[in-house]
Image (cartoon, rainbow, N blue to C red; front, side, top):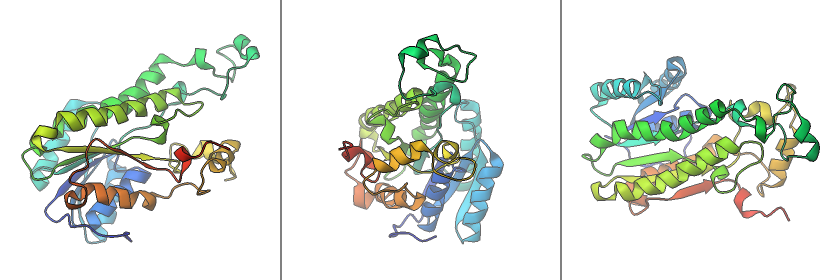
Length: 286
C-alpha cells in the first residue's frame, strides 16, 4: 500500500471496528503497512476476512474478528479473541457507523403542500420520521462507539501511549439536509470525543476524532450516483460547495490517521476533531 509517509507501529496492536468498510479497511491496511498488528472487526466476518487476507498477502499481520458493536457480549468475545492472538491492543479505532432510510427525509425543505402528504406516499417528511430509524442511527453511531470503548479501554490504560480514534463527520459541524438523525448522531460523537479526552487524561489515553467530508462509500453511493453511474443533483450541490471540487478518496484520510496514531508526532493532541473535507466547512456558498 502506498503511504504518504510511514510511522513506526512495530509492537503495536490496533483494533478497527467497521474494518470491512471502505474507509476503515483503508485504515486497517495503512496501519498494518506501518508494522502494526491489526484486528479487523466487522459485523460481517467475511468482509473483515477479505481485508485481513489482503493485509496478509502484503506481508502484514492481521486477523478477522466478527463483532457486533451494539452487543457487549459480542465485543467481549471479540476482545478475548484479539487478546489470545495479540495480547491486547494499543489503539482502538471506532469506525462502525452509518445511517438508516427511516431517519432520512425525502426533501431538503418542508413546503406548505407537504402538510397534506400522507405517510403512505413516496414523500417522507419530518413528521414521518420513524423513531425506530432514529434510534438505530443513534445506537449504531453513539453506542457503537461507547460500548467498544468500555470493553477495550480498561486494559489499554496499562500500555504505553494508548489512543482511541473516533470517526465523526462534517455533518457534526453543520447538519446536512435530509439526514437529521445521522447529523445529530455524529455531533454526539464529536462531543463524546471531547468528553472522553478529558475523562481518560489521567490514565494516559488520548482520544481524538477524524471528521471526513464527502467520500463515496457503499452506504451513500446510491444517493450520489444514479443507476447508470451519473452524478445526482445532490452530488452537483456537494461538489459546488467543496472548494477542491471532488469527493475525498480513502487515501486522503491516511496522513491524518498516521499523524494521530504516532505519539511522537501528536502526543500532546487530545480532544480534537480534525476535518478532512476539501474545504467544505470553510466555504459559505458565495
